[in-house]
Length: 163
Image (cartoon, rainbow, N blue to C red; front, side):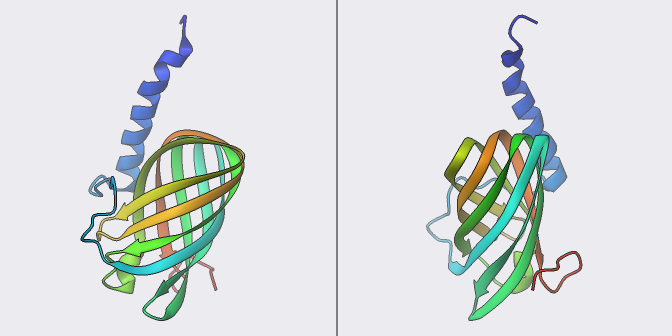
C-alpha cells in the first residue's frame, strides 16, 4: 500500500460504529445542549485513560444534585485512541429528573490530541436524555480519532467503590 494513512478515515468510521453498538446505538449523539434543557446539577471527576488503539478509562467523581453530593464511578472504552493521560473534569448536568437516571451508558464522538497538557470540551448523553457538558483537562500524551462511551455507576451501586 503506497499511503497507509488513506485507511485512517475508514478505521475512524469503523471505530465509531463499533463503539456505538457497544454503548447503545439507541443513544442519540448530541451536537449541543438544547436551549430548552434544564440545568439540574454539576459534576467534578478525575481519572485516567490508557490506550493503544483501544482505550480504557476509569475514574471517580461527585455529582451535586438537589443539595446532595453523590459519589460515582466511571468506566469506559474508546477505539482509535493512543496514549496515556490523567484527566480532571468539571461540568454541568442537564435533564436529570431523578438520581437513578444519572447512571448508565453515555456516548460521545470526539477527535483531538494532547501533548503534555490540553483542555477539551465534551458533550455526552445517555438513553434517559441526561446530558453532561464537561470541561476536561488532560495531562500526558494522547491522540485520538475516537468514538467513546462511558458507563456511570452511582457510589451505592455494585461495581463502584467511590465514597
